[in-house]
Length: 225
Image (cartoon, rainbow, N blue to C red; front, top):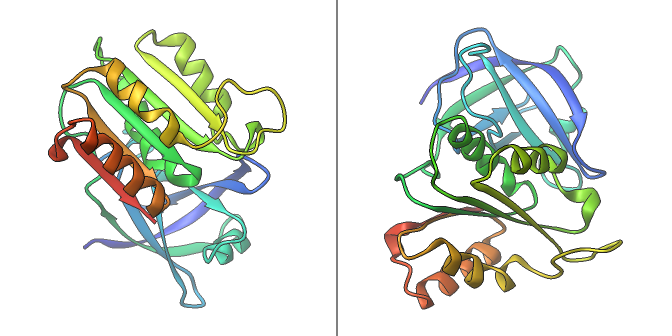
């Protein structure tokens, strides 16, 4: 598996608990949208992150990750601009599988690989519907929420459906993503593909719900943490 050095070149908050970190390798870093990398810090700790954007020929060594506070990956947030890390990857099979209506379901930073898939697919000319069902605590935790609403306005085939587990104000959907999954799967039809990423209980629950609805197991693609 490839291993290389990358420099932290930018960072910004995505929410009160999550930062976006942009790293750049000296050489091109080709990958499939949805894959992940493993970062090893100078003190020896190693942390896996899904890459949050597809490969871009205009910046072939650049990649973005989302890092949450209060997790075992906390030391990554201590990095300063200009610091370097060792990177191994890409790895992972949560990638676009077939030209079909798609339901993307994420919680927390699990939205990262699905954002990469979404950006890649919306760059292609297609009429196939794409729906993103994203579960988070409240509106302040909608990672890339402004961008996702803009993409929904620009692309009639894309629907962004955030659901808040602990809403701090008015919300269209309240509770867990599992409550809204069956209806969205029904709307996309029997040929849909489903891409899941988030905490293991969510991925397991959604997989069971989809199987109960008759979605073939080979049409369900999940990755959990």
